[in-house]
Image: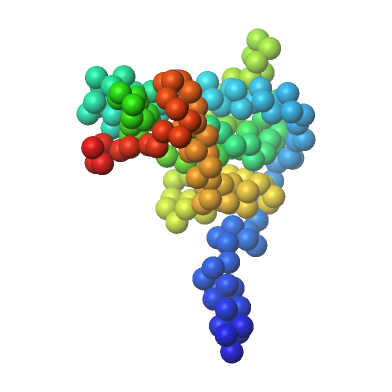
Length: 192
C-alpha cells in the first residue's frame, strides 16, 4: 500500500515540472561548437549588462547607492535555432545585485528567467537584436513551451526551477570581484 501511495504521489505531485513536456518552436536546431557557444553567451552577457529595460531600479542601487552595488549575470545555454539569416539563442539567465560592505557580501534584487535572443554576426562578434521573455506565471510554462524547441523547453523549465547553482556562480564571481573570502555568505538588507 505504501508503494502505491508513493507511486501516485510521484506521478501526481512530485514528478518534475518539466518532464513530459515538449516545446512548440519549429525552427531548425543548430549544433554549435564550444567557441561559438562561448561567443553567443558573451553576446547575451553584454546585452543583459547594457539593456535599458534591465539596468536600473535595483533595490541596493535605489536604497543603498553608497555601497556601489554591481549587477552580476550568468547564462546557461539551452539551444540555438536558425531563423533566416539570424540565430535564435535560447538561454536561462540569472541576475543578482550584490555589494560589499566591510566584510559582508550584501544581496539585493535578482531574477532567473528563460530568454530567447535574436542574434546576428556583426564585426566578428555576435550582437543581440531582440529579446523575448516569458510573459506568464506558473514558472512561465506556456511561454517557455512557445519559445523553445521540443528538446529545449524541458531544459529551460528545469533550469528555471532548479538553477540555484546559477546564483551560486554569481555570488562566487562577486566574492572574487569584491576580494572577499570564498566562504562569505550573502547577507540581505532585511538581515542587517
